[in-house]
Image (tube, rainbow, N blue to C red; front, side):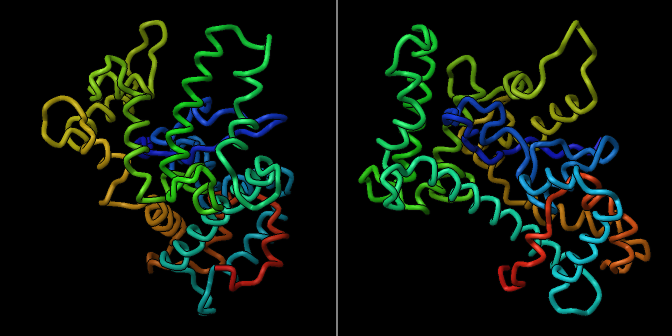
Length: 320
């Protein structure tokens, strides 16, 4: 089973009528996949690849397309990805595309969130605006939540406030678009690394020693049911913990080791995905893809799980 190591994920608000606090999400910063919330297991499905190649939001609307429509749009996308027009797509060109898709997702998400929170329409988000939109109805109003619920949301609010203050570089409690982006997507910013590490420890550390042992590490991603045997992927994660996460071999992860885990230097998810798509589609093993090779493996790239790329195909190529 091809499963990427558990790393940080984009932390978002799920906006419905009101905003759900960021910590209400099951997939927290450290828990999930950089390019998709799905496991990267091609033996099960290609949903990870679809979201990595198309974007998380965009990957939803290809459900409405026929295979013929998907292939037609994929063929047009090939022409956009082939930036030097040599009729081949390389891993480098795929990497540029995947980075572009990811940046667009983050940018469009921030625009959407700001539009909902920025009540005075001054293109800034104050902590007061965020609190009023996200927490006031949970904490201040009666009688929607009991005491236990209120305490839970107060703790969430305090954590969000701490992250907001970390993102707010000038300390005025008013976030610019860049600062609000750092608040919503802290994994994208180096200066937010410490808060990401702190939140990761708080989420996983159950005994309060500010360290993460192997049982806490495993419990965060797997809960056995009815004395079932431990799956192979869990055994693999135990090995990852011992051999690659616990650098000083003391049986626990400290802040430095957690920082190395959630901000790995040895590889990048986007680069790995670009190489993966090339490897799985490159039939003649020349390390580049023709349009035919991509279309022959269309299901991995888009399948029936992608987006209305008609909008994308009308965007200027220089958006990259």
